[in-house]
Image (cartoon, rainbow, N blue to C red; front, side):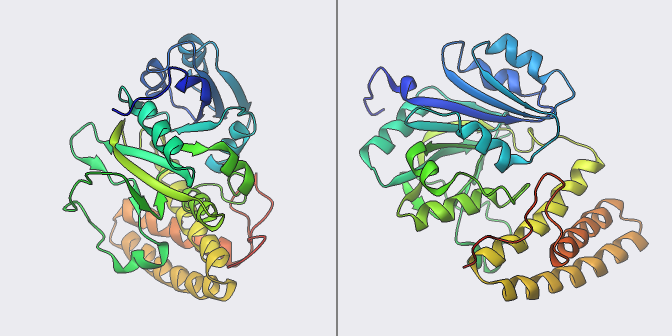
Length: 309
């Protein structure tokens, strides 16, 4: 472990976005104790998430949104309150291993070009969550399953890292304006990483630092959450295409998605495959909404990027 100053945690604020996260938030907060800076943004939880937060981390600054604002907007609310050099972005279903924050801060101190750096994310059931990805324009040509990729041995630069756990240089985040608030869910991580790199920063992973991640533990269950996931994945993909390729490219991709998922959704419904039918109907509706200029949700007011490509 690289030596770091004893005041590492004095330079870090933990930012966590929650929504009905009572099943996981307690274990997440146990690692931090009652003396760390924590900003917790609640997206309209109606379970006892906030009761657990107040018991486990009474020092936490809590922002309660009466309606869900999506991940990026809520995370930006938290980042606006950060006064430290670094922000540790955490999903409530992630748990830090000892020494992880010290390692990430040491990395960022040693390389001022780092805008964001994340740890390796082992899964509770074994293996690890591949929390990084290549350029979005290459991904359609990459294998859909990449479980046989070797475990990385040392730090490396990448194009995108997951928002599940990462250390963000606050100066860099403030410079680019935090998250894009037009995005309700999905692709907000890609967008933030893209803007960091365009501002001259690097995005990195250090596999010597680890945080356990229960994938999906912060999302919740139920058909409404399932539908919401695929709706926003389709909508946000088109928004991202318009922003970083071109609006005409997003139009072409949107028409392709709407035709493909509309047809598949109907076929799966006729074959009584409820899960796949709902998945593709959600994709169809998300694609159609984007094509018609409908914002991602009732809490966002913009359906198109402010600047494209």
